[in-house]
Length: 387
Image 1 (cartoon, rainbow, N blue to C red):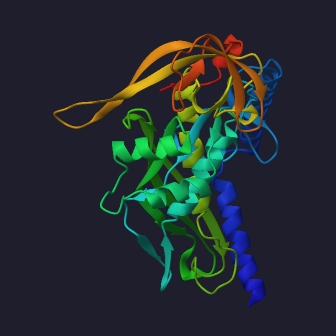
Image 2: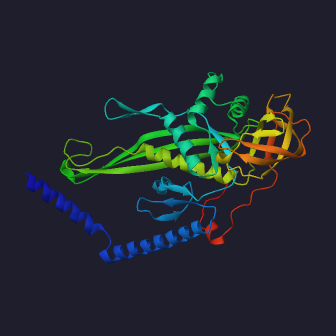
């Protein structure tokens, strides 16, 4: 019986090989693909050495490749290996809020098992992905959770502008980000193939998820940017007997975690591109005699002798008809210079003006940070469209 099974398997493999293009054609295509990958790898490594501001892919073999269109779900495996070049400038402070689930809560798998939507896991992945861009100071998830628990959001499906403003100010964040799960299909399809009789068969399980990521401005509570990210992956199983049956072989569940990681990395990339030209902003948190304490230190990329413009907060501007917060009424009152930098804060002194300076006033870099050099061949590798 065992010999019969091996013969059937061998016949199936031979049939598949005969259906393939000629060996010479296959080898030629593989050679060209390998040469193309080698060229891309060398180009990316060159850009990294030149200090270009780029994102790139690194696969399991350590090969590097340029970022491609985030809408292409055929290359979602690549997005798992997304990486960014180093960055030494000021880092904008972000907070990541709870993920909202607007999809079906779960989907049947097998008999009684269910794959629940891991909202806490998605929040953690997004936090990690934003931190990995090296462009942001991302607030610890535990701290965000503490502040969210204090907010009255039981009657709200999504954060309101007022809750965004309140939470952001307490966290000292410039922007808040949250995700919304729109589609959740851990077993989107289950295809099988093989010769009749069920002696040898193969099957493929596919999964698909779609998550909307939203970036909100703390000063106004308004949404600045939103992006819907989708990912789809599948895994083959092989064995004797029908796929999923008791005939042996190998079979694995579709890697839903990989899908979520791909979506989080896509969103982090787009948010980094959207905020790349935005100025860092902070606040005055304490004043002791001539020392002004700022809520940004080396962790946020603050440097000695940095000049900071001070803006006094005169009040919140609201639309009287709708009650919508439009932003803060800010008035420039002077300039500070950083004289000491600690891990999480800096100490500055007045250089010019600053009459009436108080805790809560806003500060921002007086001069725009020097951007990384623009290298045409490196910029051309990025085939995505910046938001």
